[in-house]
Amino acid sequence: GGGRYDGLVEEIGGPATPGIGFAIGLERLILALEKQNLLPAEPKDENVFVAVMGEDAMAEGLRIEDGLRRNGVPAEIDLQNRSLKGQLKQANKQGAAYAVIIGEQELKQKMGVVRDMNNNSQENVALDDIVEYLKKQMQR
Image (cartoon, rainbow, N blue to C red; front, side, top):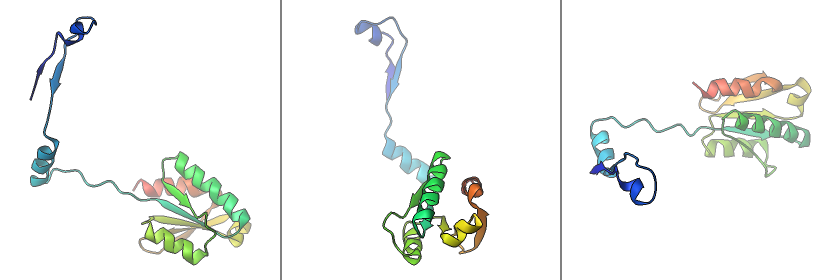
């Protein structure tokens, strides 16, 4: 339903302004689109989980998490001081697409491990390049 409302703004003290209005039964529209297979795909709710081991790794992990978020990539970091196994279990539970693993060894090498949680493959990526690397991966 709907119609023209050219005099509405004038009636409440404003200038003459042309206007229209309409209403739609949203549920009926969704059902009609569904029936014709025209509904868009559900958006992916993928994120990156940053798993860290140690205080120095936590500082680096927070920097990476912040960089990811600033670039539009949803990211979380463990704040409960869980074991690496516990953190990766949490990443799986949350449906993370990727996990970034940073420990003492990774800090020494200035590399982080980026694990694809869907196929368990992993790659060493320079700590300074992780944000850009994951940004590209998440756009696929």
